[in-house]
Amino acid sequence: MKQLKGLDIVLKNFSKFILNFKYSRIFINEILVLSVLFVFLAFLFFEISFLKLLIILLVIIALNLLVLNSIGYKRRKEINEIKSVIKSIRKNKIANEEDIVLSKYLKNLEGNIKGMFQRTQNDIVRMEKLAQARSDFLGYVSHELRTPIFTIQGYLETLLDGAIDDAKVNRIFIKKALHHSGNLNALLNDLIDISMIESGLMSLSFKSFNIYDFLKNIIDEINSTEKIEGVNLKLLEFDKDIKVFGDKERLKQVMNNLISNALKYTPKGTIELSLYNKKKDVVICIKDSGIGIKKEDQKRIFERFYRTERDRSSLVPGTGLGLAIVKHILEAHNSSISVKSELGVGSEFTFKLKKD
Ligand code: ADP
Image (cartoon, rainbow, N blue to C red; front, side):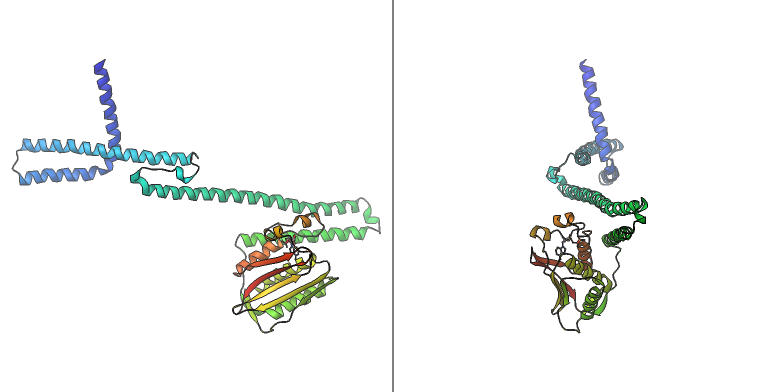
């Protein structure tokens, strides 16, 4: 019985030794070279018999095996430590980087693993946010598309059911269907713009142009094409020779968005466009005397699809994408837009452009 126990211990230790050896075998070449060197030196400098040489060789082999065992043991411990941390990360058992602890000789590696862990965590958070944004986007788009499609469908069905022969309503219904298909078209255009901008596909063509002529043309175009009743839209005078640098078409989209918002939200009053000439850039302001924007909404109106509670429930048409597009276009010009507004008094949108 005692003998069996002893054999068991020997076998266990032997298997441990083999395991340790597995971890230290990468050093075997160095150890072999050193041993041969020792034997060679002993043979060269001391006159020793073959038998003594054989004994020295055996002692060196035994010592080497002990050294390899000790190195293997330490390596095995360290590698198991690293494996266990990686396993915990893989199994999501680590909540924050403070939980990653390695022994003192592995501190350098600990820092690297922590950095990697933090990066993966950030990627996960970013991906979750993206997935959420994508599902919000799909939800919003399908909701926004449904309203005009159902309305158009409704008018067409009523017309088919007989209203087409009713001279009192047929033209009105067709006009309404046309109006809603216009809204649908505007929404699709805004969606195409925002997806192009956000995927980095919007290409800009920067040129130098006269800013007075540019603003004057926009105002004249709006005054001649849109029915503006009760609102005085004007450009305040400034130096007519100033040139700015930017993408004229995209900046026209910015101005049209800001002015059409000012018109939408100013039932009666004035809308003034002004320009302040600075050293390196110009400041452009679009100021209206309209309904104004609540303080808490001012921070959010540049987010895509954001419409204030008031506008979502009102009949004012809009997609909530206009200001997000404006913000993106101005950012592509290395600029930014800001708003000052007071409920019942009006709003003022301001941005800068580089002078040429
Ligand atoms: P929308 O298509 O709804 O106009 P925007 O992105 O252009 O979308 O504007 C977002 C929201 O900002 C609007 O729904 C509106 O509530 C508010 N807003 C923008 N411009 C003005 C303004 N000049 N006066 C008052 N509210 C404004």
